Every structure is written in structure tokens, then in C-alpha cells.
Image 1 (tube, helix red, strand yellow):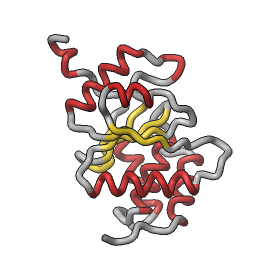
Image 2: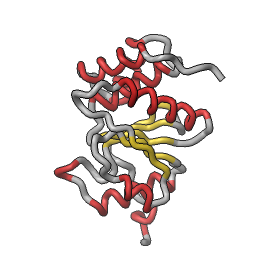
Image 3: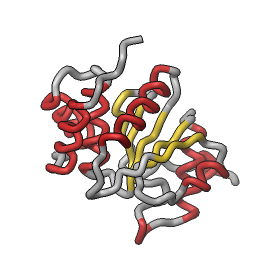
Length: 170
């Protein structure tokens, strides 16, 4: 591959939550009806070229996991399924994300779209990890970074995250 495509393209709605450590986007390649394998490959090339070491998928399905493996990107899958209690998934995801952030890794977290549930997971992580002291501040920060309001589904995840056992200081 030559030219500007050799460096790939950033995933849609790519946004840093913690600069050079934790970012959010929609699923590489786009969400289901608009998913394109070529675009996914270009976005994964870009992620690898930018130093990303892990992709965290919150999809209920295992879509893209093989593509991450094929592109030699680390990945984790924490299915955030609607209608299922998110507590155990969030605890596992937050512990993994936190360990990766503290290790200096660059992580991308995604679901199909960059919507309220991913926003809620990110704001919840900021509260759970004690990076932001209160839920309203974490919600406002994520809303500011993404440029739109978080819906009730995302806010509920922040409430759940705040009630989880907090990260233990190192």
C-alpha cells in the first residue's frame, strides 16, 4: 500500500478521553449496516500506526475480534448486552482498562456506534478509577469531549459504576 492510505484512517468519531491512553470511537469499519471490511482494515492500520496496543469491544457479539487478531492488535471483549445486569462486565472491563492505562498502553473502547452506552462506560470509568470525583463532573466531561449529551442509558451506567467496589490504590 502506498500514499496516504498506507497510514490508514482514524475510526469515525474518534475521541480521546485520557490523552494518549484511552480513546473512544464507533466500531472500526463502521456499524452493522454500514460496515466495510476495507475501511475496517484502514482504521486498524491507523490504530496500530498510532501506537494503540489494545482494542476493547463492548459489542454483544464477537464481531471484529478475529480482525484485531489478524492485525496483531491486542483486544478484550466485554459484551455489554442490553437488558443484562452490567455490573460484572463493568468490573472486569474497568480492571482491565485501568491496568492497561497504568501500564502505559493506548486503548480504544468501542461499541457499534459511539453512543450513550459507550459514553456511560467512559464516564463510569473516570468515577470508578477516582480520576474524576463525582458522577455529574464525569458526565459533563465526557459530554464536553464528545460534543453531545449523554442519554439516560449512559447515565444509568455511570450510577452503576459509581456503586462498584472502587479501584484499589497502587
